[in-house]
Length: 239
Image (cartoon, rainbow, N blue to C red):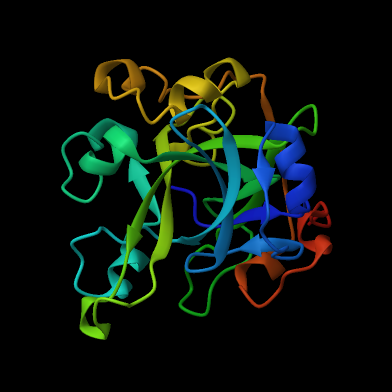
């Protein structure tokens, strides 16, 4: 899964990288983006123009009665997108790219290492990022929802989820899942709202090449969502 990531770039820098327009205000640097936070997402219109927008992290299906369902929909498994009621409609029509400067994953604890208050081996957080330092173009889905109990004039809330797939060779030692990272050549195909070929789209949702990413263990400060600073991606001190 993908439950925390880094977003440290300005919207202007992100838009320039993806060749998109944007008019959104900055969300600020956040080295510990967590579910239910606002996040950036790149979408395309019918003419192929790209736009950087802001989404709530945790997809809320259009048919949902309340927004809290989004807390359970921060990730969407690539293998079942065309089957799950919450995702199959948006998979066909409403796709986005979620820019990340890297993400966190927790490796199992090791014998002799720290333990939790309950005596279990403490998991070890790692920061995962591109070898070349470029942003990650992560496949996402989005939806527009509004609370019908607030009447026909209720505001629309745009939300998104991160698409995940099986781990590549780099990630396998610490986790069996990872976000789908789209190569630049596939951005247009994924974002094109006119492209509703589910079989073709599904072929894009594969693990990243093993040599694309690298990782290092980081301080356990990242476990607390209140911590947001750049020190979170510093290498953990040796034990």
